[in-house]
Image 1 (tube, helix red, strand yellow):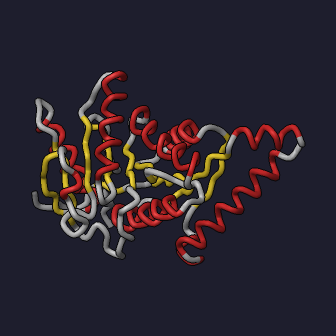
Image 2: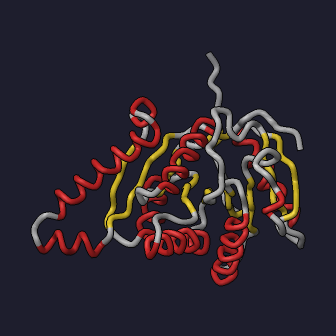
Length: 257
């Protein structure tokens, strides 16, 4: 499908950070998304509530949050460089990662949430992976998931090319339409393909995959989120998961001089 002029752009791109190399990769893709589709980037860290509770008992919760925010700012600067980091907002909230990300995304009215599929090793790796899966199950907004094997985004990512992963079924037309609207936001050419074998799509042919999910009841959406996570885990490039019933991007209204 041919690209159309960009009539919509993003305003807020929220990136979940757990100080791991994988979340650094997610941050770079958040910045690349802002470069391609507009919007400002906000880096978010969810502070472990157990640490916060311990600090509260010691009357030091506020300094702990301030220290964590400073550490987040240093992480952003180290990942992007000082000049690019100056444009990134940093925020720290206390609570379980899934709840913090969803609440902050709604508060900021984020157009897209960017996350990795895994964070640090051991328990933290399992925790961050489960947070991503939980987001796909419970959050109805757009989520861009960056798999561990995704290459570093170039200055022109996604290079004007996107792949729409279209599942067979009665919702195929609505899914294809949602993928086309998303490509419009990025100003990209859209190629339609099946949603069964994401591993076939090499980075050179599809720097970004959009996976639209049909509107569903809560129980069905929960199952869709699990299936979407399995799709993302097999992908080699970032996957933008979105629901067909939700608008993406904001209309640009040109004013007469």
